[in-house]
Image (cartoon, rainbow, N blue to C red):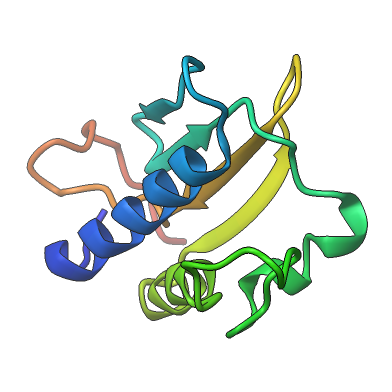
Length: 123
């Protein structure tokens, strides 16, 4: 993948901080990066109801407005960084409870590491 390391780092940090905020003490937040350019952050928090999944990436949106300490910008920043990198961000249920956030980047093959391919003859 290609991108700005500082802004991608910010997106990852926001996803991890969000997971830690919504995960009960003593539970695990799992971070997985796969070879296809996807990053998954999974937690054991309350999850995100399907009805809220589009809204959570909007600026200043918070499900619990009574809770202090958050301006509702973290996930909107993640969404903005994803758009800047032609990436996607989404949330699904985590098996066993909680949420999994997926930050998927377009896969870029480097010519030095790409397998050699034979070209078809032109007729």
